[in-house]
Structure formats: structure tokens, C-alpha cells
Length: 237
Image (cartoon, rainbow, N blue to C red; front, side):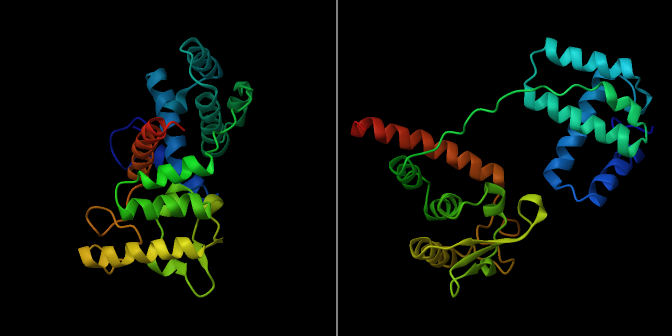
């Protein structure tokens, strides 16, 4: 069955789409999103997506609007389906009727210095305090923090090397003396606990062979935010 919906891992349409995305330098996260959106379309259609018509795409988008699907999800589906039909299936005329939703993104909430300090203090242990401090202090994304290795910390030049970050590009981030001291505290604690294994991850996961997951770091941020807000309320700030 030549379809994204096939349960077998050797699905030819899925593999072709993944190959097309890989050749164009798409990141793993983007590839997963595109496959997920195509699967949603296939589920709506009830048959392989390569059998769809322009009217099927129109019905799919109408259904999304009727279900009050968010603009970001609709636009993500548009990008995924445009890629599927224009690149993988070589049917660019199919993508002409897909409509992008125009919307003004909301400004992100920026924490004050006091709020950031409370958030970091509420982190559960030195490992997560160090990880969140790298994210806030050096401006790294959670996924970038999760995949840092010990050798990425350059204490001589006071830099943090970020490999294959956003856009699959390497870059350097500044390392402050305070952050370096915190990382050294974590390094000593990690060695004492025996979690700094030869795999070289700066923030190992539970099994030690893999890095901590971005999902786990997001969960820690949410938990620390709840605790931090409670501390602020008690202090009257």
C-alpha cells in the first residue's frame, strides 16, 4: 500500500517524502511535523493521500476551519501538503488551492530578572538548574541544551559550541564566568554520582547513554515556573 497511512515501516511514499526532505536539509523536527500533517490528511481522506483530488484538499481545509483548528496547525498542514504534492508526487497543481491563514503572532512573555532568578532557583537540583541557566544565560533553545556535550564547553575562550542548531548550522554562544562556575558545580556533582559516562553528554538522561530529552527539560521549566510563582506570591512580589 503506497501511502503514509500504511502500518509497515517500508512505506514507499513515506520513505520518498523523507528522502526528499533530507536532501533539502530539513531538520528532524520539521520532518516529523510534515509526516504528522500528511497522516492527518490521510485519516480525513480515508484512503492513500496520493489519490486525493483538489476538491479533497478543499474539503480538508473547510473541515479544519469548522473544527476551529489553530492557524499555526493549518499553516503547518499547508506547508506539508504543498511539499508532498509539489515535490514528492510531482503534482504542483494540487497545491494551488491550499489557503494559508493570515494571523498576527502574539508577543512572547519575557521574564523579568527577578522572575528568571526565581525560576532557576526553583529548578529541582543542580543538573536542571545548570541546564536552565544555559538556556536563559546563553540564549540556547531547549533542544540545543539537551544535546550539548562536555567538549562543547570552551572555558579557555569562554564559549559554548552549538552544533547543528536552528537551520542545521553551527554557532558559538557566550559563556559567562557565573555560568561556567555553575557548570563546574554540576560536573563535580555528576562525577560524584557516577552519571558522567564516556558518552560525553553534558546533561545525560536517565539511562546515561542518551542526552536528557527536550520534553523532560520543558517539563522541568513548567514545574519550576509553578513553584517560582508560588514563591513570588508568598513574598508579596
